[in-house]
Length: 141
Length: 144
Image (cartoon, rainbow over all chains, first blue to last red; front, top):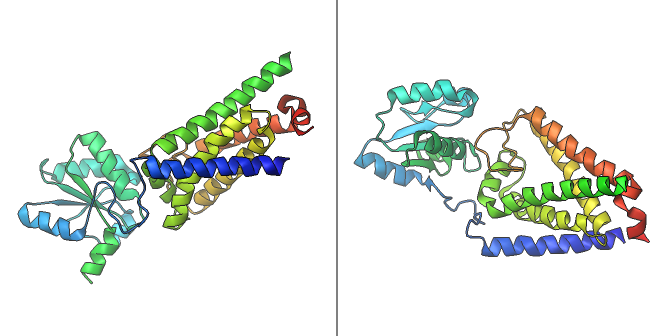
């Protein structure tokens, strides 16, 4: 009896999940290599940097930042948000586009920091580096 | 009479909670995916499955909890889900991760572990209370 109920509920859940995946415009990419909303590739960041100054923000931990970071990048993570944001704002011209990165393609810190910055600064030219620090290291061994 | 009120208040509270939690994640799977990835436990495709299937199951079981014909099944599924959430949070806590629960709203800030445990154990307690009080849950009626 209970088993049949559970089977029925699972079947209904699968149907709803498939319908959501097929119909919802906010769809999660099936391929992790695909760019997500707000992400740019390293090549695009280089093209942007060639045209005008961009600011790199490192959303990883203090220890990871200390071990190595993109030259000129500022540290900004959620461990010590207020202090790090204050330091960053003192060094930012208020106009240069911002590119945030974290450890790898799977990390979320860069997306979180970018979303929080957009919300708190009301500044839209904030991108996330696809592949993060891993992509940078691969391109600059 | 009093038991009837208690039963329906608890059933409606539990059903409403899971329905709401499921709907907001169904509405914005991208935000929920970001939350799931903060647990750093699942490969992409498994996380993708969880992002679409778990909220759907929450919504279906929330409705199922209100229907006598599916109440017991929905109770088992939701109770198992809650236990899984608690284990997942405990594992993340032990690993020292900053997780974004994503349970009831898309969030940009790390969730507080203490608050997560209090809330999850509260919901689990409500479900267990319903499940172990046969008159409240009307298990006999349903299974007969």
